[in-house]
Length: 99
Image 1 (cartoon, rainbow, N blue to C red):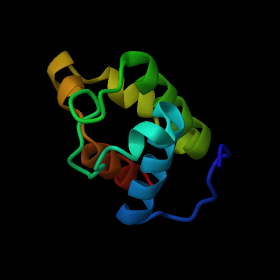
Image 2: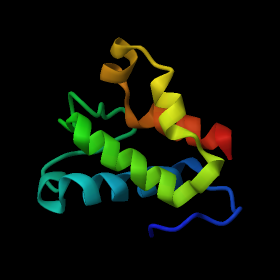
Image 3: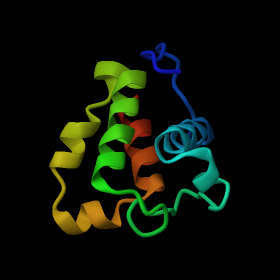
Image 4: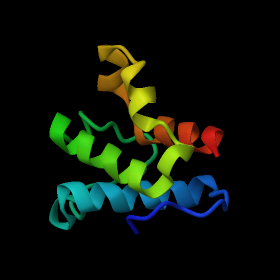
């Protein structure tokens, strides 16, 4: 699913499922099976993703949504504490607002 999405607006559950798919592709299915991924899941604390994995996740969002979502720009506007505390729900809300 690494193509730019159509103009169809996704709901929160669809965005969550898509983000979970991207996380699985980045960190591996064997790790995801051991985790309970929820919208409250933190990338650094709960999912234990390192910076390279987060960049790979960002690329998947960019490939899927194209210019519709400036995920990298949005992340670059955050300070370190915001990045450390970033959770899946915040990303879902951002994508929902950008659609």
